[in-house]
Length: 426
Image (cartoon, rainbow, N blue to C red; front, top):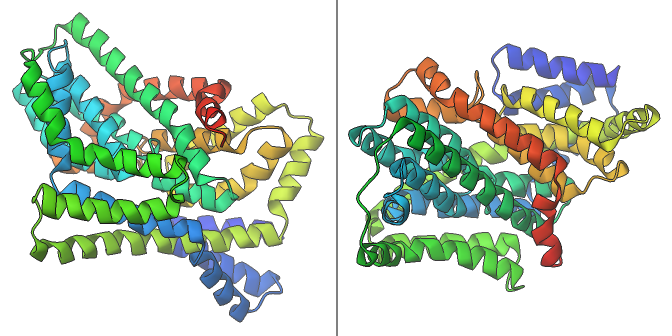
């Protein structure tokens, strides 16, 4: 009865148009008040306890670092370097755009931020160079999803906090799948460009490549500081996030000087708004997860699946279908905090590595970012191109099939995710 009430209330509130965070929190509170034994005082204490989780402290710092990097012109320098390196190939500008998304994803941790930072510059440039706007928008909309897979990914931090999985191991596990997906996109673009005889840029001189690399050096160093610091044992992922925020501030204000001191409060306010919005979702979702755990819902589902004698590969098919459906209608953070507590214990009982499950979930959520009707990257791309949502959906759909094929590969070849963490003893 309690379980049915919880999910019925959740879906009723969401169909009424309530924000996801409010629907999660209100359905949890009403379920406990009507059917549970907890008091309102214990609920408020639970919400406070979940919000002070040490791992979650990384989120506002990574958001702040991304805000400084996005505002500070780092994307322009990375795009210049990417074009200098690969722009001479067929479809070079599109390939360079994907490379720029890979690089910027590694300093922002956010998919929409990657689409905005890179897409607002390169889409217009690709159109001027002779690409169709539809092709340019489709490439950026899908390549931008790398922002939640390549570390430092905010979504991976949330998964780590929800399942008590090592964030360092998750970050390391996201490196190869993220780079491989970027490479797959580049190869497909190159093949399509050769077939359709798409334009290429003049080959850049070695001096231009060196100059562009030197210009983007300080932005790229953020990747080295975060990952090198974590895996070198210098600091934890949460401490790395704080260091990244300070470093991004110094680079944006004092090295590149794209931001003046007077603009810093504006960047802080923007980062604070995103943080408050995300943390409000997280706290309410963790309250929802608390109700699930209290009612032993994940355990009961796990026991039922074990009783059905479902194999691990069959369970992963169910996971992918469930996540693809959820990703079309909900925001990634909410999906992880609702479904991870249910899927995690089942995966562990079936012998599925928690780190592999985390990467699998994130790849599903990447696809959700470009799946209508709620795919966030679709709306962001429409906003920076003045295309209609329908036009963006049509532009992104051919690339969506590529992401689905990649999902199957990641699902059943866990070594892609697990090799690097195992080599690094995570």
